[in-house]
Length: 320
Image (cartoon, rainbow, N blue to C red; front, side, top):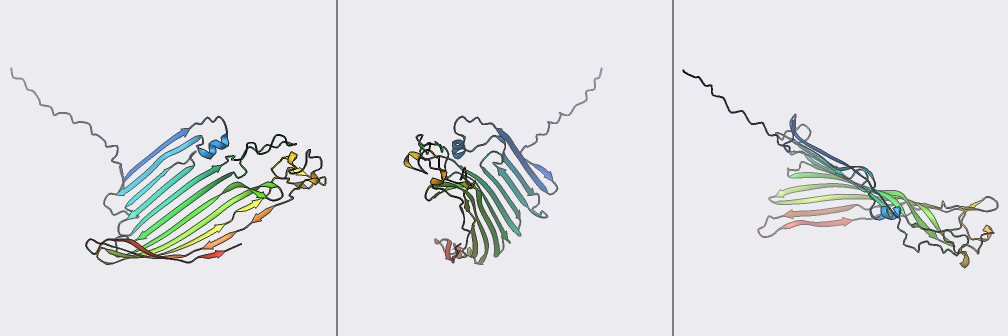
């Protein structure tokens, strides 16, 4: 009896997907990732001291984020490569975002943004500042120079025709630091002032690179820096009043045994030294343009010149 047996092909192995290969979208290969989390904190003790030296707050956080797009044939419409990454947003005191966009033979752009939160409330004086023998006893357990400021820094750089013999470089930077803070005034009696902190620095850059010789380039740069200082001071510490109803500030140092701000007990406020108001504003403006000429070359054998610059700075100061 003849038996017919049909041969069977070996079943194909399942395709293995490379998790790092990315996804093709139009003319680009795209990689993207997000990493989120949550921080829970339990603080026992001085919260102001924790914020001064640690400053990691509870809540949702962005651990890391990245986006990369690369043209498959290096002929993207607006760009060939794009890279975007971030981290720290949420409860962290430091946030960073980076962006880079590149188009072959046309431009190269990079951007960077950073934000830093600075908190200082560490009482370095005797704790409490005022002695317990004072009548009244007014303890001061926090810093008289505390601050809670943020610094935001932005850097933008653009290079046109990066592969040509003549390149054009443009740039802009901004550095802003602002926020509430405290200071003191040392007059007849020390008093605490509200210090509205704000400083701004804007910087503009333009440069040119010339490749007139083999393995040699000359560069010219012009920098324009503009500084603004807009910090102001004001007395908001009016916790006492005269018989006429006039609010007054008799300072923050209470040692009535030594007669500061006056003898104990405080039965006659008018006999004390006091402040009825205090404001101070001193806006500052400053500009300093800078020119720089440099060259880089390895034209000669065994001789290498690397960014040898000549810099000229002119300063303009505008006092209040």
